[in-house]
Image 1 (cartoon, rainbow, N blue to C red):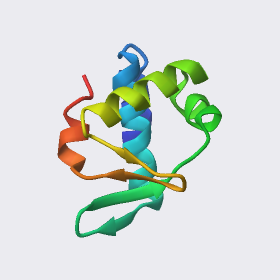
Image 2: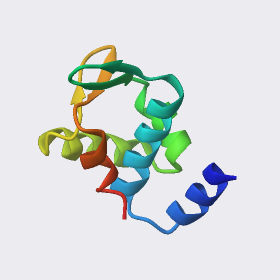
Image 3: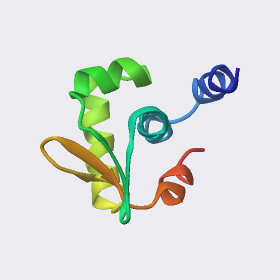
Length: 92
């Protein structure tokens, strides 16, 4: 029920909020907790776009913005979320 409410609230949100929520959703389900943050698999942008309901190009652009802000660190195989609460604050 919580996830349904979350998705309904995000339908009207901006693209950054939707991508951030998608990353946090993935982190809740399949993350690996580290001392320096949370790691999730670096999914193809096509899959992230499907999960967030956005175009692939938009997801790519938002991931770059989040990375520039230091909210995520992308590696070839993983996305590292150094500060969960900081990423959560980007969700409007």
